[in-house]
Amino acid sequence: MRGVTGLCRRVYHDYLRPDQTTGYEALLRMAVENGYVFETVSSFDQRVREGGVQPQSRYCILRRDVDTKALSTLRRMLQAEVKYGARCSYFFRDITLDIPLVKQITAAGGEVSYHYEEMAAYAFAHRIRDAEKLRAAMLEIREMFRQDITAFREKTGCDCTTVASHGDYINRMLHCTNAEILESAPFRESCGIAREAYDIEQMRYVTCRIADQSSKNFVEEAACAMQRGEPVLYLLTHPRQWGADFRANAREDFLRLYHGIAMRQ
Image (cartoon, rainbow, N blue to C red; front, side, top):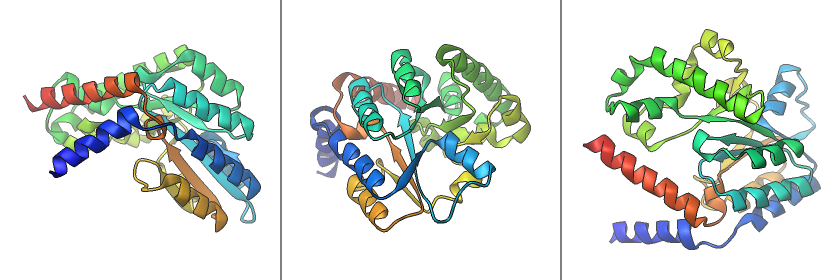
C-alpha cells in the first residue's frame, strides 16, 4: 500500500502538479521588503574572500540546480528574479544545458556554471558497483572532469569558477559523492575552480539553509526565516519542485529507471 501511495504521489508531483512559481516570486518580494541583499554563490564567495560580510546586513544566496530541462519553469523563475533585481546561480548538468537560457540568465546578472557528475557517469559507463573500485579510477575521472568543464566553458562562454556537485541515484547507491573529484586542492586549482558550492569556507557563514527537495513547505520555511531576520539565508531550488513538466520529467524518470536496471544486472 505504501508503494502505491508513493507512486501516486510521484505521478502527481511530476506530471499533474500545477505551477508553483508564484510562491517563489512572493519569496523574492518578501526578501526585498525585509532588506536582504541577493547574492549568487560566486558573488557571496567573493564577499567572503574580501571580508565584506557585514554583521548588520542580511544576505540571501540564491542557487538553482538544473537537474531537469524544465525550461518553462526556469524561465518563469528567471522572470521573477529580473522583476525583483535578484541574482541567482544556475548550475546546469551537461544534459540540461540550454544556451539561449544561459544568455538570458547572464544578461540578468545571474551566474551560470557546471553541475558535475563524473563519478556517477564513470561508474555507470564501466558498471562499477563498488565505491573503492570507483575511487581507484580517480585519475581517469578527474581527467574526464577536466575535459567536461573545458567543453562546458567553451559552449557557455562562462568562467565557471564555482561548481556544484550533482547527487545522482548512482552516488546514493555507492555511498560516494561527485564532490570527491575536487578534494585535491592542486587539481582544483589546475581546473580554475575557486569554490565548490558545498565548501565549508563559504557554508560556515550561512545561518540558515533551506532546500526545496527536503523541505515539507519550502515557501513557508523561507518566509519564516526572513521574518526572523536570518543574517545569511541560503535558498536551494530545483525546477522539478516548482511545476510539472511532462517532457523533462519523463526523460529524467526514464534515465533513472534505465540506470537502475543496468547497474543491478
